[in-house]
Length: 182
Image (cartoon, rainbow, N blue to C red):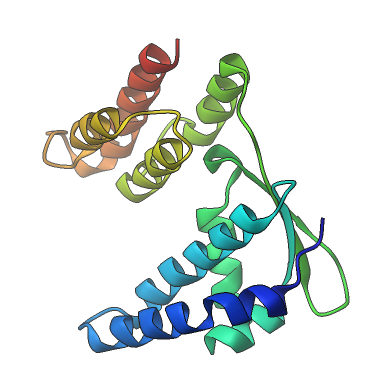
């Protein structure tokens, strides 16, 4: 089902304008905050969708948020990955149409395989946090589990040379998620 972005934009316009202004007033983070706002906006679009599928136009969204289309691409490639439960299909031509499908994880073995692929041999703290936040938001792990995993992945908990922290973090994350999801 294709949602009317214009209808959604009107519905959420005031909310997002306020959020953008708040982020501009904070020191150090318009670009980081605009990414969070765009991510939240896309998630709101998905909530409004009956079939967990939306189609957006990069240029239209970039114009709304007064940012470059590359900012939209950044959000899509870092916040809507397979490991976080999304499939992104880019459509050629026509102003950069993109279809975003939110996966529904009903079978734990499939979920474990996707997570295992997403984590790989190493994972950064930021990527790990995004993955577990996504699992929490989908109700797959509890808030308590989210906090425990986050603490276990923290740089302060991994006392080792910097060049192997991401490998250790990946092993910790895989092992903990396997136990939780079995």
